[in-house]
Image (cartoon, each protein chain N blue to C red):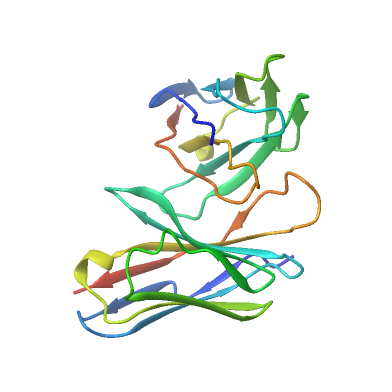
Length: 115
Length: 110
């Protein structure tokens, strides 16, 4: 079975540019999560969706960050304008909603470098 | 949300069992305990989870104490490829948010 698919795997861009990260969750999963990992802050939750609807975006650092989920098989995380401090590894995860205790499954991440 | 406490690092000889402890003394009755690991900078990999009973799968075993205040992840025959950071996590009551702490860095050596 295909896992969570993220693209691109690596992104290097200059400060001020728009960055779009993409995620395809596991088919049939109702929840989708975006995380960010840095050396300083570790792994932190940015936002999550349930049935394509954003439920909690309290982890989104500021208005430069936005996330969408136009359908059950696709989500984007956009940074505009990007800044060097946004450099991190961004992970997407998904889980099934049915059944208690369902685990989240993570993608391989996008390593983002803002110069 | 329950907090978890893990030792920062552990060593294990290849072929031996690795026993990773976790304290979650404030866990509530319906909260699951999840274990993940992260190798290098790959995405966190789900290992196992449990509520009250001990659990076993192809990767590991999870032993949860009767009072549910602590648990132990057991890798029965550790290999070099098991070297990773291991996270013990108790999500929020909705089971949605995973709060990652610093985890335990397990080093398996030959």
